[in-house]
Length: 261
Ligand SMILES: [Zn+2]
Image (cartoon, rainbow, N blue to C red; front, side, top):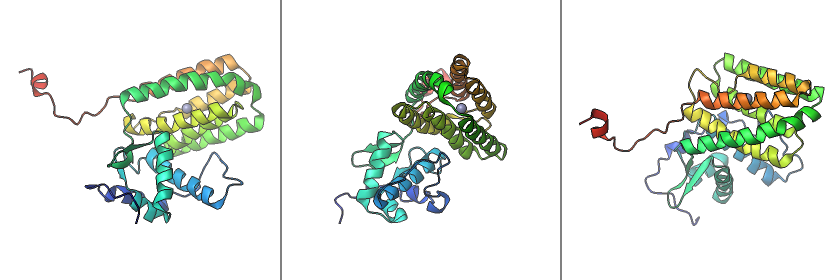
C-alpha cells in the first residue's frame, strides 16, 4: 500500500481523458535522444513526453487533476515512478502540485504569460548571431522541412499539432546556437508558451506564422545576424499580440460594477 492517498473529491475521469493510444510514446519530431539510457530512464522519458504532449495539445485541460494511481494504471508503472514524472513536469511549470489535493495541469496566469514572452525575447533574439554564424545548409534544409510540416498541419486544421511543430522549430533553432544550457531553457519556455497559446490563443490563429519561419531561415542562411535578430523580435511580439491574455475569473461577479447600481 502506498503512503499517498487519492485526494478526496478527485474526478477520476480527468485522467481517463489521457488516451495512451493517442499519445504515441517516444514520438519526437525534434529527434531527441534517449540514446544510451537505461531502460527505466527511457520509459520515464517516454511517459514524461506523453503527458507533456497531452498537456500542450490540450487533451488534458488546464486545471484537470492528475491522479497518481490512475496514471500509474494507464502507463503500467509504479506510483513512485509517476510521482517523479509529475515532479519534473511541476519544475517545468506544466503541472501544479498542491498539498493534499495532488497534481493538476497548470493554468497559466496573465503575468506568467507576459514573463514567458519577455524571457523568450531576451534569449531567442540573443541566440540569433550564433545561429547565423554556425548554421549549415543541411541544418537549414531540416528547418525548412519543419516549417513546411507546420504549414501543412495548419492547413488541415490540426491546431495542436501546429503549435507543437512551431515549438519544435524554435527549440531546434536554439540548439543550433551550440549553447546547450540556453537551448534547454528555450525548450522549457516553449513548453510553457505552447500551454499559454493553447489557453489564450484564438481558434483561427496559430501563434507562429510559419511563413515567418521561412523568412527567418533565409536571413540566417545569408549569415545576416542583425536582420535575423530583429526579425525574431518582431515574430515573438506578433505571437504575443495574437493572444487574448485575459484571465478567466470564475469568482463571484461584482454586480454593482457590472450593472452600475
Ligand atoms: Zn515561430
